Amino acid sequence: MSDVSEAVDVKAAATHSANTQPAATEPHSEGPGISCNRALASCSYQSGYEAHLERHGVNKPAFTGYDFHHRGDCTMLSRLFSEVLPDVERLADWAEEHEHKDQDQDQDQSALMEHDLEDAQEGSSSRAESEMTGDHDDDDEDEEEAEEEDCGDEDGVDGKPKKRGPKKRKMTAERVERSKVRRMKANSRERTRMHDLNSALDNLRKVVPCYSKTQKLSKIETLRLAKNYILALGEILRNGKRPDVVTYVQMLCKGLSQPTTNLVAGCMQLNTRNYLTEQCPDGARFHMASSPFSVPYSYRCSRLSPHYQSAAGPLSLRGQSYSSAYEASDYSSPDYEAAHSPVCTSRQHESSDSDRNYHYSMHYSGLSTSRGNLSYGASGARNSGAHAENIPPFHEVHVHHERPAQYEDLNAFFHN
DNA sequence: TAGGCCATCTGGTCCT
DNA sequence: AGGACCAGATGGCCTA
Image (cartoon, rainbow, N blue to C red; front, top):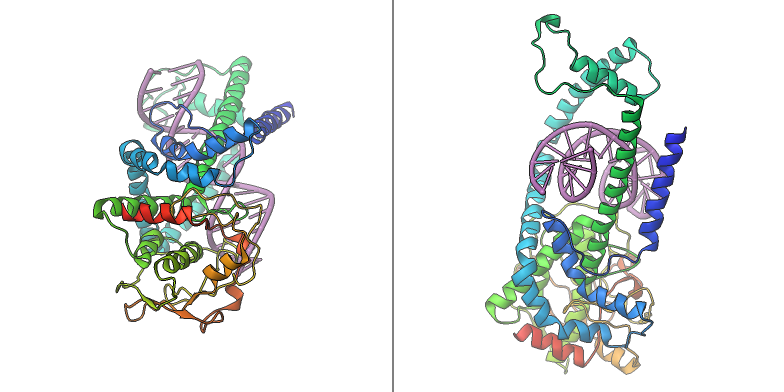
């Protein structure tokens, strides 16, 4: 079957090109109506910068990613709110609709299933009938004959009126061949388009809080988290002050799946620890503002690995508690890049043990949501309510702690 | 094994 | 006619 082999060749070539090309590292130009791509690709400026360094064989300095990011905070925010935000708002609307659709689908699931069953029965019977009427090997010939029948000159068959519109030309062998070539080209373009979209999504993954090379957020979770992140940043700008951490986490986790919520909460709590120890270096008990933690909607997701099921401490969300696993962890996993988010600071370069102890010896008692009152408190490392099975290897979660410069920036960011 | 996620193919629609 | 975009279908992979 030459057609098949050709298709495979085209496919292989496309895949090869997609694999060999550097993941779209720079925002690319696009045609009209690709607002989604543009929005996603617009998030890629930092990774583009890093790729640029790589291309030119420049070793990324330890602080490059962070410095770039935080120097780019103003740029980033201005871009967000002048260029990207309109697109991402549409994205957010889409995600909102998607969520509502999910909920509606849940409600109507039984009805749909019944409907699908009926359709399937009708479809199978009609297919069986069509199979009974002829046995052609070539699908194109089937289509060709169907077209000719549909547009046939003979009218009045079964009293049906003659179809209007331009009469379809007979499919010659040449036209069939061209059609196949066109189809293969369209497939190739579609693959490229999806690869571009995925590259943009990868770039988006890198700029949302919590990024892991080894365990990627799913597409939908990436979009949801990005939406929440943007909304949270917007809220910060509007209020002109730093929100309390729990509220911030709440904003980020709204609508996320449980595993992603756990991941984000874990990342955020690590940052929270640093944040709090910066604020309360004496380890004094720190009470968060009253903030009922409730996430209005989430769906279950079994895709994510247990790494995502974990978090960085006994931060309790949705009635679950998460244990800390970072007493003695690998802080220098190569799998994780510097974060690009102000809330994800890199701990790759953290080198001092005393530093570590300082920042990770403080544990917080469970963040209880049951009373609408959330409190962090310094406590023992093995806190009650910690689930050992939820303990991740630290390097599996991408959070970033670089101090002190990062925290100055972080605080400055929150204080803006 | 079921379910989630993903890549790919495909046909339809809209636009240039 | 051709390209971009979209959504449905399908099969593979992975995890619980």
